Length: 267
Image 1 (cartoon, rainbow, N blue to C red):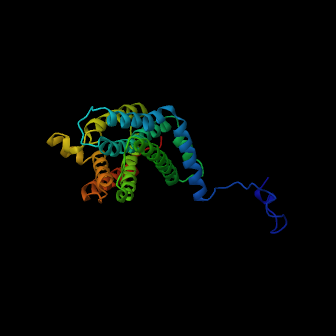
Image 2 (image 1 turned 120 degrees about the vertical axis):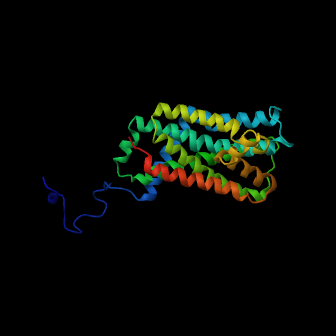
Image 3 (image 1 turned 180 degrees about the horizontal axis):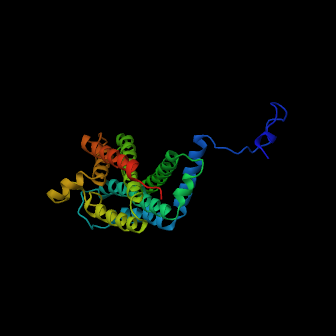
């Protein structure tokens, strides 16, 4: 049976007779479907919810109400920016690296690459899903922080959104780079170790100014320190972020993104 047996003169059949017509959808519809699937899978994953929501909430409430770390008053004003930075790091870096690593191991990425989805759309779908989770985190954490007495500077909210987007890009590129180059088990271990190190010494829980001199210099050059300090500036004073945090985040996003395009393996 040849394809000519299926062809018909133009106009012989009413349009829609042979629908649905197999074929690739528009890029917008494919992106929405891919991002929606990734978002639902992430929100149904108990470990992901623990990492991206429960731990930041516990730290937000604990560091605000308990005097575990010396912070200026009001404590919540200094705790919230760090917790928001932690939430972005947990979702875009740790969660993304682990999920990407195990998707490679189980052949999910290879099978998706064999579909009509372009490779760029696979990555774009994951990034859009990450932004969706980050948006949920910002709303949930913001509401809880408001209950605890947090009153951010209104003029700094737009700057905060820009910093969160830059932080998501930097951590997301690093997560894909890690998950796309190492074995899944190694990725799991490295991602969790990096998460703990940056949490304790990367300017998130303890502000960079309170860290020892050499460690403060290192933390200010890391995406965690740059994002946390930038958010503290804009949300407490309403002033624009300094040039250094923005440049640090842009540099990490560009360097990790370039490395990911060259080194990431799909299998």
